[in-house]
Length: 122
Image (cartoon, rainbow, N blue to C red; front, side, top):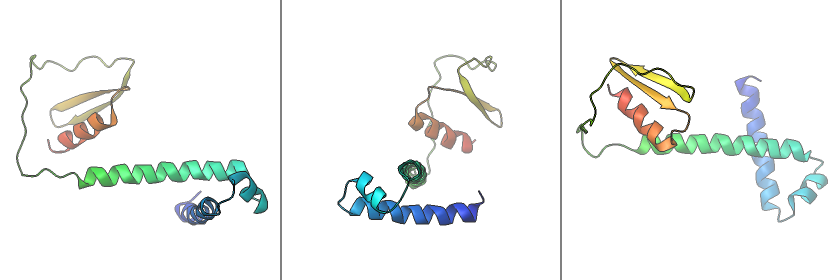
């Protein structure tokens, strides 16, 4: 589906979901009364929630700006060596200049965001 078609459908489903939620009726009754397939409804509701959630995370991350133009340093407790072998749990490796960061599948969203910001300034 091209971008324009998806945008049009997204706006249509936003309206449908809003009307359903504001109707005061149980969703199953409202959907039946408006001849809307419940699987399609819940599929679009999930898609829209994911899109809105992603937009909120990006907006929050872009709003986080350091209070000063200072650089934070931390002391490494072990010497930095060669890049280790990529393991089975490795989800990605980020490289920027002479810095390489191996990302594990179990990384938290907050840590990943901080790493991406740090690497983008290298």
